[in-house]
Amino acid sequence: MRDSQRLRNILGGSAGNFVEWFDWFVYAAFALYFSRAFFPDDDQTTQLLNSAMVFGGGFLARPIGAWLMGRYADRAGRRAALTVSVGMMCSGSLLIAVLPAGLGVASTALLVCARVIQGLSMGGEYGASATYLSEMASTRTRGLWSGVYYSTLIAGQLTALLLLILLQATLSEAQLYAWGWRIPFAIGAALALVVFWIRRGIDETSSHKRESDGAADESTGWSLLTRYPKETGIVLVLSAGGGMGFYTYTVYMQKFLVNTSGFDKGVASQIVTAVLVTMMLLMPPMGWLSDRVGRKPVMMFSYGAGALFAVPVLSALATTTDPMQAFLLCLLPVVALTGYSALSGILKAELFPTRVRALGVALPYAISQALFGGNAETAALGFKKAGYEAGYFWLITAVMAAGFVVAALMRDTKHHSLIAAED
Image (cartoon, rainbow, N blue to C red; front, side, top):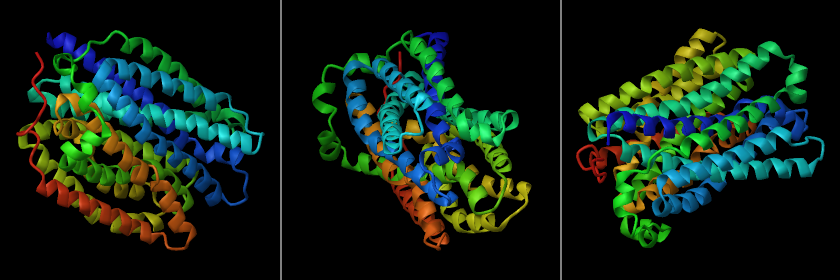
């Protein structure tokens, strides 16, 4: 395959990843405003907790989407699964954009349905897109492209936050509460339609073309548990720590800075945006580093530093009132987290053979995200409401420590990859 063609395919797959994650994170970014419409309550923590529970509910649908779309990607092809997933995300975003907020329980039920549709989409998107990129990239640059891939995820979240800042600057708070929060969901639906068209024109990977005939028999959840239990366990544990850290320091942090530290909503959004920009820029160099020194050392650094930073950093953030100090404190765990994030897709794909790769990447990852990533906000707010917010800080430490142990014991997938080099 020509380098120009390979690059076009990788960028086509990554563009869809950007839009999918923009649509997904818009919910978290604008929860400060629409939570009042769907969950009327005088207590802000209760409003955010209710919206966080719906956010977590979307994650519960992700394992189902991962199972369905992972099998579909292994059987029908990575490109086909990518096209279906972005179409589903478009539907979920459009539903939220037009959803009436004054129907009581019915409004809440429709909001949950929309998030379930998006959860099914995201469950399939991650496995299909990570597998597609891993199989499409050359052997020497897989880590680099994995970092670029995850940068598009950050870019989607960052764009959601930038849109939030823009709307905060142009609309009044009353307008944002009334109808302004609908704008990003409508934009997300429109962008998804564009990507749907783009993805129909990308090539299928050679790895899938060579070995797709037997995927129907091997790509099952039972096969993962019986034939690849070690690999599945590795993905489960690493995804738990990485997901919990990511959703704490980039998604929940906005609410933490407002609800615990006492920052203005606009200032909190700006701090998190600056953190995300830094994280996005660090991803490709961290992936490139893994191409030189291996995946294992980078992963060990990520989880080891993540375990050490959690309690002191979050404790300091809870009492700081200086925006620059808050930004610098946030950077410490986020820089450590880039080690996992940059390699998240490629390391998991390198663990599994072609016929079960998309499902192997997607299903255990989605389960961990449902349990740890998607419930990070719910757990943090639950600890806070119970009067023991620091308990959540120690929970992050424990999960990160488990990730460090697994990273230290596993083989370096850079030297033991099961991905065949593309033609």
